[in-house]
Amino acid sequence: VAFFSESSPLVRTKSLAQMELEVAATFPEIQYFLVDADSLSMRSVLQWDVSYLPTYILFLPASDPLHQQGTWHRWNPERTNPYKYEDVTKFVGGVSRFRASNFSHASSFSPLTVRRRGAGFR
Image (tube, rainbow, N blue to C red; front, side, top):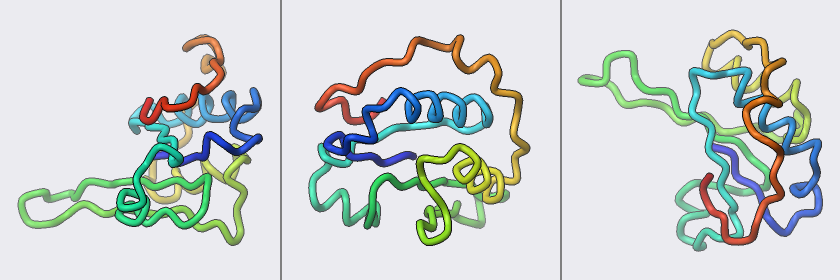
């Protein structure tokens, strides 16, 4: 899950939209959700433990779901840049243990779209 702020000027850049497409295409095994944190209630922000934006949170199901719970992994902002493809893929690959795939076809998924206020999940 990627949380962003619609009010941030960096969110509206084509380069960030392209990076998001590339990350989603690099890990086709993982479902990628974008959430506009501006549209969340304060309770939701606290429940998700979102303390900075943008941030990424990855859920990994348990290997034995009958006896274990899945785990949530949160982005560490101290040494990484959430706008940099290499840092995001390093986080996702490191946590999930999935190998990065070829994303050269990412731009053929759909044209880049400008985010609209109130979009919430997409």
